[in-house]
Length: 278
Image 1: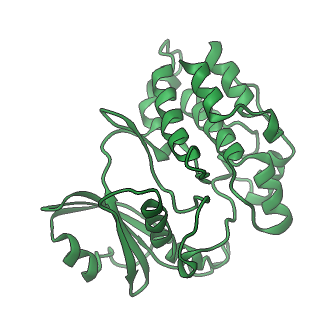
Image 2: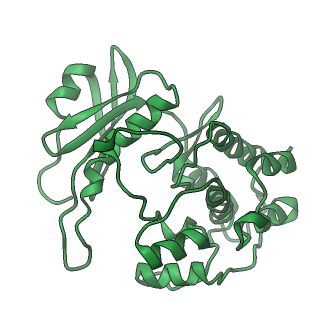
């Protein structure tokens, strides 16, 4: 985002009364802060609309995403979560989770000539936190390595703004228009190409988890396309199943290969993935 460094809205400052605050992410449509206060340790998210440019259409939904995520977290029964509106969009705060994400944790595995193998216990932690969501009837819709935080006691799955599975306030809802194409299942990519929208599913989450494990372990995307290809070209490659061979050794590689099956019905369920890793 261009312009001055954003500030936390007064409504959030009043609610949390921070003792320290740190801007973690500042990107088009959103900012994320780490905030400590007498109430605890929080992640604070602000959303605002993305205006149209020569390269990108306008994306007003980004202003609603924090409140939508807050509503989802409330439906899931999480404590210490609040959300609301500010002058440019919506906000939420939620507990801060300490630890590296999956991609950063497995960085040693990706180094040239490395003999370090991805640990199945880490993969199992990711599976267990996604299973917690699936058993409640929800699909995440935006599974990617950065959204698995490997904490000292358990793994956390974050960024649920696109999740589907229950009612959210109509004023904060918006259609699902896909996610990062690297982790998009073929049927999601095809639907977005054909209609501009799609419906997140648990089967698509399985594909995205497989793609996340693959890229974190090897540095390679599941599907081959040029790095600078436009999104429709990327999605066409995904929808057509132009997959790379999975080069992860052992049973984890076989499991990832099954998770990346083109047909949703051919993929294992989250419970089958967990059973294979135990």
